Image (tube, rainbow, N blue to C red; front, side, top):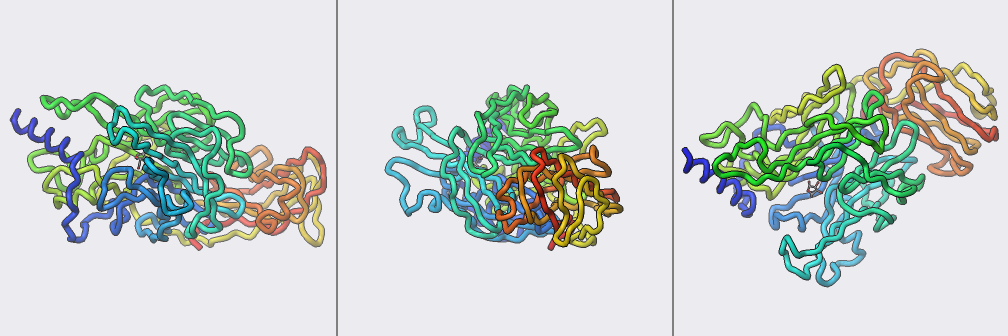
Length: 496
Ligand code: FUB
């Protein structure tokens, strides 16, 4: 037995380092991972204005294996969480370098990205990770450099164009972008950093905050999720004790989890909440077990990267495993290697007190989402408080005005609100549930330029817009300049 354990530990270690060939062409027999024709990692999911869930992913390769060969991003979209369309490569390292060459002695790679919609544009945030080869690949001596860059496109399936090759003030990898209900965008990255983004979305607004997360295992891969008014930061937590060949299942052994913390503030401090996702391949009930053991062949201790999205009443964790490459390499007969990862999706469940139940990793994946509601709700004839109607829309110069739309059926979720800005000024437009002080679902920040930006169309993401309600559009207009708005829409309730 002792010999068997030592042999297994060695197999796992050697397996994790060596590059195995992916020779097995048999169709992969399970639903998770969701993309099977290529290797995808580091998924970042969001609901976009077309009502689909989009994710941008890093790409792992058949050859090369090591993370220094990660050079591009793909986007994928789905209407049901099960079937995913590959929209192809949207950015590569060559778009960043501007020509076909890496500078002498440097090895450039693009790691975990994120993508978000704002004011008619899609912004792709990505880390540039440069390995200086002066000391070869000697782990201890080599120098690496990393920072965050931004690219922009008019649609999430188009080629992105770099608009800021290095966001000043950033250092580190794994950017995640989050827009709060008051319309303030935030960028998270590296180990513990969070910062406000300027309205232009490609510069930090002030100094980054070194966020307090009370978990000594915090490592990287921040994701921000807001639920019922609380900010949930989740991240890759690394436990560093090496595997003891005498005790390979020691719970304190080298491993990677996703843990989370909770706060009332998007920049923390965060109180440790627990584990969101166990080690990859652990806690999997179904499927094959490694011969002679009670765990799956792709149980791996390295890297764990998550993204969370709410879609029509359920929350989903996007993470990656190497189940697919393990199948291609050994048909599940030996331990998987950490060479290629693939995106999996499973449901997140909460306890009534708001704590997260660690995700049950599955091979079957999640149930199909089937929505029958209309794509768009056209809003007509609001009751006006502090505003009046003219031929072109709603006009107001009051400090605070309110448009009340009765009986709006938001069903299982409508994800965007929009309107036309005919005459603009510095003001805030808030979308609230039921009344002027009701739950804030989203907001628009208007400026004198808003009537020309995105052809005057202003849009915001709505968080938590479901069920039948009165919708209250509050116009906060401190300077009391005249504002004219029209064509109010609530949309993305179904896939376009
Ligand atoms: O995929 C490359 C790197 O591995 C990511 O940036 C990390 O989060 C880890 O997943």
